[in-house]
Image 1 (cartoon, rainbow, N blue to C red):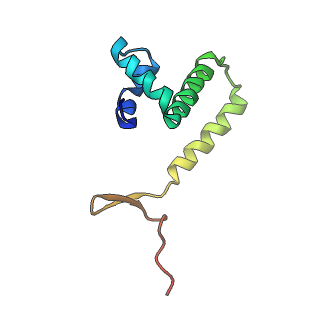
Image 2 (tube, helix red, strand yellow):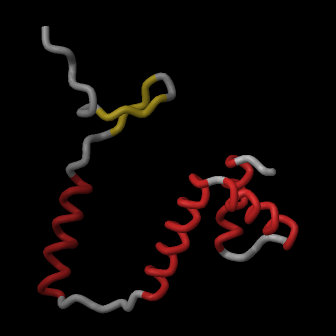
Image 3 (tube, one colour):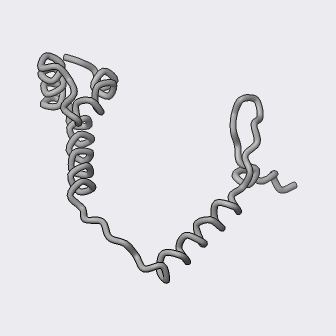
Length: 99
């Protein structure tokens, strides 16, 4: 039987039915025996179904414009990231300790 890591490597292609019959059989065997991967698969499949079946609609500009302006403001006010020893940290994430 394949491992969870091997399952994850093929997961996206499996969801889109882009795997060979042999790989499909291995993945389905794994799903039948691994509850964690089965939960991930079921929830992902359901999410794809909801998104693809949902109907889109347009908001009036009087509704959408304030939302867009608000989001632009949030993005502009995000803390800047600094690179330190190949790790990206936020200046506001870890304030200096109180002495």
